[in-house]
Length: 540
Image 1 (cartoon, rainbow, N blue to C red):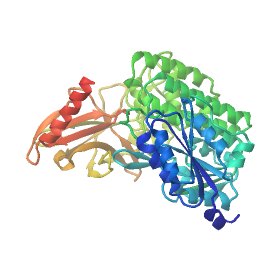
Image 2 (cartoon, rainbow, N blue to C red; image 1 turned 120 degrees about the horizontal axis):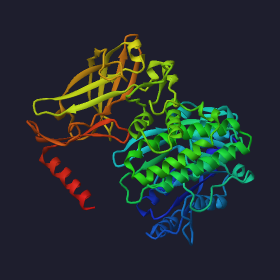
Image 3 (cartoon, one colour; image 1 turned 180 degrees about the vertical axis):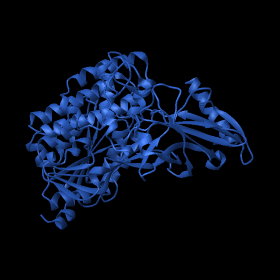
Image 4 (spheres, rainbow, N blue to C red; image 1 turned 90 degrees about the vertical axis):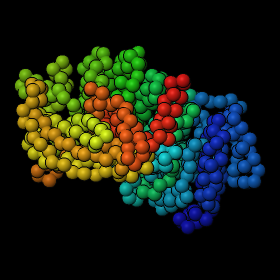
């Protein structure tokens, strides 16, 4: 069949799964139906909803012959069972999956189908956009894979495919999945995508990649029921993630795909481990102990060669966890796990002068810091915001890092302040750095400082993030965020008199990754709204 014939005839089944998602499920289904004639059927699998979702779908199906509704008599507890049920019912040559709270952008099916048919590929994959709601800000997921149209002859030739753990931004040949027995884990199995994608890659298909946006992943952090990927507060979530990661590794290794199996280890170190390590200090002591014990046990199963492909920050975090029997250095680990990473003082050395994590953990070696390019170093910049009625000052301090900063000769610091929800830039500026070659601390050989005057009134309301760029004498630079200093009331909320707004409420704070950010609420209305939300949280 030619590409033109494929687009003109029903070729694709879209399986939509949902549970108690009446506000969104019809939008998901309509986005699948709107893909055009290539979609022969949409199978909506309702996982025994109690909020009327099933009735909504049946009313929609009464006017849409391409929509078939399957209503499960019992809730499965997960996403795998309803997806498997939809896959078994599919009658089209190709199938793809859609969650009830997400949507397919126009043209998604045509883009994937075109690539699959043109290259005779059992799998076609495209760009997924994470869309923060209600702001609408979009962030591409694993964009490195989807920069251009290409055909991967075998997954082992592009091990980065392992990092795209989503099943929903892909089109699959139905016969390929059935002949190879590829399915999702049944029942309550969080991170079922990990396992399904591992089974797909283990089968060794050709994979066609397209740069087109083919899936919109709606992220609703304020939802009453968080998605599995957002609800990370309980240790069961981490245990499920580790189990899914281990099973993915076993599947690929069992299929003889050693490079892909090793890539799952790198994915764990660079993504999962860093993400959860950034949040450790938000959890209780019991959670931290359980997390540490579970993580140490899992990391102990890694072969030494499993660590090498992973970027340095994840390797360092893993080495610290393996070296310490109890949770420790959580603040520094959080900063090392940040994106980009920051290595805060103290900067210890072993007896031979080589860099190490700390005097207490000298077995965690940091020799790579001596040879990495300066633009990849975990440079540490401290920041303190001094809000004042007569003018706010941002103070910055760049730390030396085992002599590497001095070798590169930092000259200027570029500052950019952006609004988190809509991405607009509120301030940019460049300031010279002043060198302070000596330090009072024996673990630090010096630092560079800068001060930047800010007009907070001009920024307006919102949550503002700070990013900095350190420029060196040779023309290179390092992009990073700045560590929020918390001493002496630096992160205290202040109400400043404002000629423009009457009053400006300023709240500097540290993000989950320890970076400085600031919330601004101008005017008495903004002040009242902040107080209302705070009272609501206290009462809750």
